[in-house]
Length: 231
Image (cartoon, rainbow, N blue to C red; front, side, top):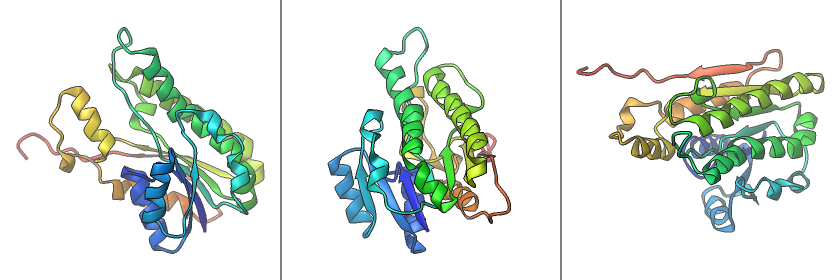
């Protein structure tokens, strides 16, 4: 099987790439810079690594021509977060989160769709619980993730006749470097044991990717079992 992944440099994306590589699948990884591409090439021998900066979605134009043959899954994992109140959030932070979390997945999907159609594959959007409900100081991130949900819903309706399945996975707080950054912004102590393991999210992603052809999972939410205080 061949899989195209973003976000393979850390967290959920890195765990997923290791699992796919470990079972002998073919990887096409999108790296934001030549330096990151070198790191991924050293980590995943035999993977094809493409360089494009998701913060500048225009760099994705034409990237589909660098991929050969059918693709079994396109998995959008990469994302960024910058918390802030609406009355204080900088325009640059709004624009970057929309670019990385929403516009780039739309452009990359457009570029790879011919390959996914050929493979009758699956497009998987790793969204967030913030794509279902927005909290204070999460406006920009949640807006990008609400938009990603809409993108997935429209794509699903458009591609059903091409045999392309579209799934959205909504992990809640997961023990990743992004979550550590979020805790720092919130002024909270980070305890990775309280949150979902990236491997648990990967188990869900693999279930979606490997689902037999007679079914699809449009949406699935993964939430941590947060211990109660004192337990």
